[in-house]
Length: 241
Image (cartoon, rainbow, N blue to C red):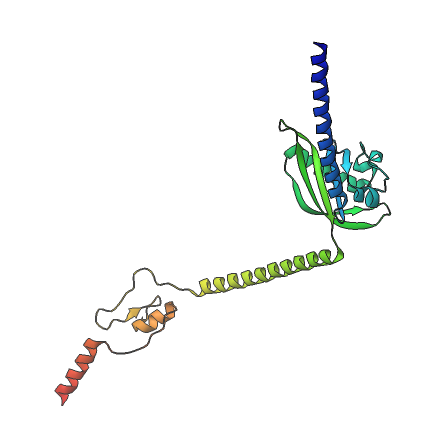
């Protein structure tokens, strides 16, 4: 009975060792990957924004620590100026509270020597097996001066385009207002002579139909002969001959 128990224990220990070796290998691969990302900060924090992990670039270039053990359990308030730390903490707690990631946000940072520069930062929530948020993972990539200039130029172009659109909008509105002001409509009952077809205006004067309409609308008249009138004139000329 004891032999069977010992054999079972040995098998379990051997299986556990294999799993640990696999985990260690995966960890080494992951570590090598994040440590060799150019100009990138990689980190993992718990729900209280305390560091659990960070890559060598962040340790050496930004924080100035010699090992991960030096910063595990610390927060940004221990490592960065208060104003920056407050912003980092506020953003991270929002991610933890809402579960919504921050993607490619441009933000300022400062390195161990006091040099300031810009980052594009992404922070995502980390979930446990039961779906509970247990912390965040983040990665920040350094933005070069050229990229910053391109961003500023792009923003400037957008602002210029918006201003042009606003000028064009005001011009169109002005033209519409002018057109509305110039529009005159005929309405109501118009007194018209049964015989000569003249129209009486508001002052009591009688005017030809075309003159009256031109005064009270944007219409203009061109004169010609309709077929009936043309035939009448031709017949009258024939009779005179």
